[in-house]
Amino acid sequence: MVAPLKVGIAGLGTVGAAVLRLIRKEQATLTARCGRPVEVVAFSAKEVRDPDLDVSKLRRVDDPLALAADAGIDVFVELMGGEGDPAKAAIEAALSAGKSVVTANKALLARHGLALAALAEKKGVAINFEAAVAGAIPIVKTLREGLAGSSFSRVYGILNGTCNYILTRMEQEKLSFKECLKDAQRLGYAEADPGFDIDGHDTAQKLSILASLAFGTKVNQEAVYVEGISSIASEDLEAADELGYRVKLLGVAVRTDKGIEQRVHPTMVPKESAIAQVMGVTNAVSLDVIGFSPLTLVGPGAGGAATASAVVADIGDIGRGVRAAPFGLPSEKLKSNGRAPMQRHEGGYYIRLLAVDRPGTFAAIAGTLAQEKISLESIVQKHRNTRPHGGDDPKSADAPAPVILITYATTEDAVRRALKAIEKQGVITGRPQLIRIEKN
Ligand code: HSE
Image 1 (tube, rainbow, N blue to C red):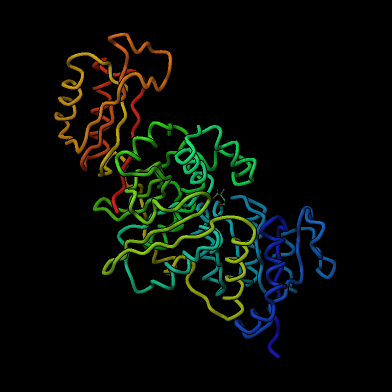
Image 2 (cartoon, rainbow, N blue to C red; image 1 turned 180 degrees about the horizontal axis):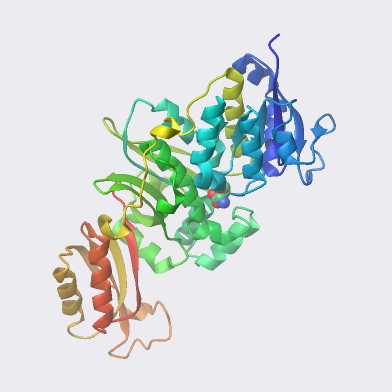
């Protein structure tokens, strides 16, 4: 009989408990697939919140750092979270002691992934992190192993279930952003600090990991341009619908002639695209693979069972003795990835303005856009009595009317300059809304 793979888990919250249960439930299958039994033998946790979780036969180690270096375990599973200590110190301790690590910690990987990968390589052990990005979707393995023979021009996806849930409900039920956020929190989708989800930071951390895997670059969260969804209004979702688009919070990493552009922002996607079909808390990642048609992986991005599935698969790889370079290439071969300047981003734009409804307004707007060589694909003026922001008297000759512009491909710089000039001309009220368009 081959010796069992002995696992120690730090953190027994929702995911940790689900991992323990899954390993127990699938013991026979895991043993068959790995060629050796997988056994959780020890844990560390501030508290075991689930009273039905049987930990009576496990050794409890108070200090996660002690567990990480414990001679009785082969694999250290870090499920405490947080980009600093104790998670970071514990992972370093485990790797230094020659133990493989499995973690779901996107924040830690986005900031320290390169150094941790280098340490794991030096010690000849694995650091696996499938669960850090898009829950049950095996996107890390897909990029690193399944498509190891391919190159990519673009990787993009819906990586935050909370934002997709909010945007889906706003669109389908015509609810406000605030109402939907409240429901997401009530249902337990949002992170403790909802700003982390809705301001795009959770997506940015996940995107930085995917970009490194796809483009062979050093993971660098600082290189990601980030905008969240809190400025999205019902009018934008309605206008998008009329124009054949949906609005999604996307993380996009794309190869450009200025380097790898990494950006997170609300994005208009064509309604017929695969990514536009993804609703609610579901995640999706689309890969533009060079040489054949794109592929999209869709599935649950969060929750105990989905995340545990990825963690257990990573443990299984260690049991089987499978070890890939954490980011696909040996860490010293990963290239530096500076921040591709967002001002030079090229693409189409949706612009919503509140235009002062009097002769000459359109001429002024069109003239300014023309000066910046911005060409319009469509222009729609809504009837002004829609009164989107209330308060204005629709009978007044000067009441603002919503104007929706869709541009052909241009640069971020040109659009920003044009909008600044339009604001100065006094032909609009309030701040213009700007949403980037991402083509299939
Ligand atoms: N808060 C994340 C989301 C869950 O809403 O998708 C796990 O990353």
